[in-house]
Image (cartoon, rainbow, N blue to C red; front, side, top):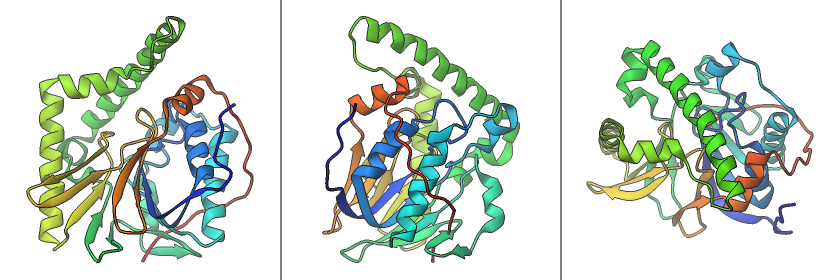
Length: 274
């Protein structure tokens, strides 16, 4: 059983993306642990929250998937300002752009004002992915290949656990080793940085490529909050305006992979920002 701090840690803002609810690879147990352990004034869901692509092929939706949505809605009802920015996998929700439901807003993108006054452009990032924009069939083919790598990864890690070795991500390894993947990530980063600069922003916060990062690129603060499929990471802003990427610990990751820790958090609903 995982141990969670009794008093949740509070942040000024939390950013999560690429949860991919509706797939078996979504680490819902780890995300629920994180949501229970944290509170924030603002919470941004930066795209690919629900994976409509996968749901069209094979339905997978268990109680923990419901619990994640219910937990987020409960936070909104208790005062957290919740912003939902749809991505390419949940693009159907773009039909609800600029609508507000209580303290939840659905937006294409947002400008986040940091505690120290800096402006950060918040967007999923898929519009800077040429494959998604101009060859959606190829994007879906790539998604199928990614799913296969995740299934293969699960088998590899079962063997590693038997040998008492730590968790290892095959897809992350390929991302950093395959030349074309490295080039794609670099081009993506350059594109979102250019967009932030054009909007007179000091930073950009995005998701989409499942690669958490926090660094300066050409004078623009580039932040990627990662995902809840492989890295189990979130981006947080502290009260003083400092940003930090939190990796939900390896114990949580292993528990999520094994389907351990199935608390139920029942409530219900969904929302946009302004």
